[in-house]
Image (cartoon, rainbow, N blue to C red):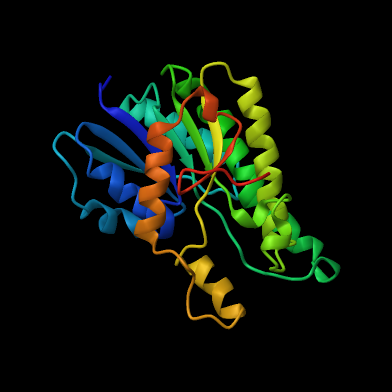
Length: 247
């Protein structure tokens, strides 16, 4: 089994996931696992990314809308690549397709967002927690959102009744998993309002050209938060800038 630091990132083909992938590939002696919905469509592009000495890239299929895909990816990584432990697992994949008022929200939209943004990370954790438990001080970081904050809801007056609700439910599960995990550091991360496809879509809906943060600004901050996470971080909603976002 490799002695490399093992990192798995979901939604690694674009946006924050792609930015985080590039950060970890630039670190020597890492095994970086890019989890994407369609490896055949993205593997060639990801294979061209530069990487540091002794760092390798693996690409696997994980579709957050399909809970069984996490267990299948685990089986593939163990059998084909002898991955028997993880140091860092980043649940990044998510969707934000609609921004209705609560009184106008479609239950079908809520279900779709819960499938990906809430159930997907839970299935990911359930599948891979045995590998995380092989590394003392391993980290499970769920990419959440300031839009999920109940305590700061008045400061974010966006119609986030669908997306925000699914991420708030994710935050509850993250805190519960943290309280139940003795050896794994489990926490959520607020990446800020980032110039991803989702972030810019929201910005245009409010008459703005783009979101506030560049992807580089966000992912560099997220990586620092993950690097510095300790057991005291477990159960928190950390901001990309090192602070805390209220639940």
